[in-house]
Image (cartoon, rainbow, N blue to C red):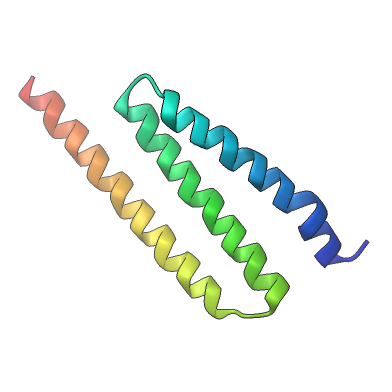
Length: 91
């Protein structure tokens, strides 16, 4: 089994199943905190899919896109935690 077979037949199906489960959790999340965490995990899983696609097509420019997406996800998580901290202080 080569690396490409491993990526296609093992990792991509696992990531696809996790995306479906995370999307269901995003829709059914009881609170906004659960939805934000799920959205962060969805973006992280998407970064994994982009990385696998970059490896299989031998185009390293997609890794730059994945890095930018990771930075945006990180900044979104930091902004949300700042919002939660300010909201708790006001209550």
